[in-house]
Image 1 (cartoon, rainbow, N blue to C red):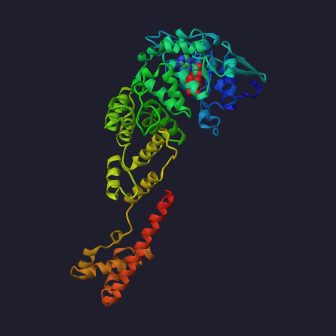
Image 2 (tube, rainbow, N blue to C red):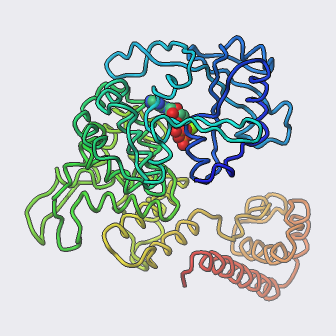
Image 3 (cartoon, rainbow, N blue to C red):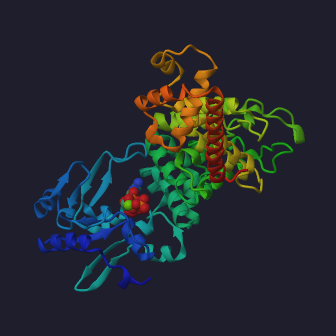
Length: 494
Ligand code: ATP
Ligand code: MG
């Protein structure tokens, strides 16, 4: 571990220096020290100090103190206008310990302490319990729990006695899984044993905190491994037990994986194709109802209605985890329609239009993304088959306004009124003849010009007018084909 490279950015260095000049001690602590030692650029920087919140505020008039946990937000960005967003505000927290843990929840109270060692001891994992400062050009690392060694060994290990730490705050159970997944580390054996033993404590944690930690796992590149680890550590049972129902549930001749394997693999592919959180969640949950709807065994087992039951189950799960409405509605919708049928040449434009109406234009891309992840998760080799690309083309086709005389600034009844013409085939000829000109020069698409021009055209012989109209129709068809050709190219279909 090369401490010499663990330099602080100027914004952090100056916060620490000013506190020291005012007679206090101050260190960078927690996740930022961990990331620095791993050679990564930290995102959040946290500073711990023995100065009390009111002292911190005296040292930094440009700061605010809003909670009761000793954290003052120093707005150093005022002095460093070019600072990146993550360094504009630095959180400075008075050394503290947490007390009065009620039922393994977040502490109700914190106590300020004099010694940083006590502050480090209340942190969750050894790799998160280090502090670093620079004195006269020399780094000073406080590492009372051998976090640096665990970093080298790629191990997540609780500070002190794991059972006690998880009993204090059960969210740490999930944080262990999240960190292990994020860093691609393993969880120390004793710590993992304690997680399994204390998994049930998660019941005491508020749904919002569980949800947020779950979504941090789902957002990771290794989300699939994260969900597998939640399961093997016994935590999934207290988060989404419905997913466990799919373990060892075989499907039928169309699937090589069990329901559980298929669900987690689908999530893995959703991540691989850079999908958003909604698609990731939908991929993980899309077949949630298969175990409950399975009829028969072996090659010919069926799962009729699993998308309807699954949408209902997903709604219940997301409601229980207090997901916001927009996420809930979206994920439920994607699951409800994930089985949509599409085949090139077989499915008509009007049924594509119906699908778009049901799902909403804004959700079609995500529905296709779910289908892609789900197909890959079944072990199908081709990621985005021709027919899904063709569906995207069809959606774009039905959503656009086709090139037609209807887009002109005048219509048949305008012509009849202004020119005193009776209804009849001549109106159609005039419109198409006018359209021929508009297609060449869109500036001509204004009512005054077109009425005036129609007045001239109506005096032409019928044959001449018919020929002009025919030219207009052909031009329109050519344009329409060209536009569709461009959309086809975009979706790589023929
Ligand atoms: P990241 O910012 O990458 O999510 P982090 O380790 O910085 O990871 P934060 O939630 O920002 O996580 O917390 C900052 C530090 O606070 C941690 O490194 C850890 O020392 C401590 N900490 C956070 N949550 C807990 C907790 N539930 N129990 C004990 N210590 C915690
Ligand atoms: Mg952090």
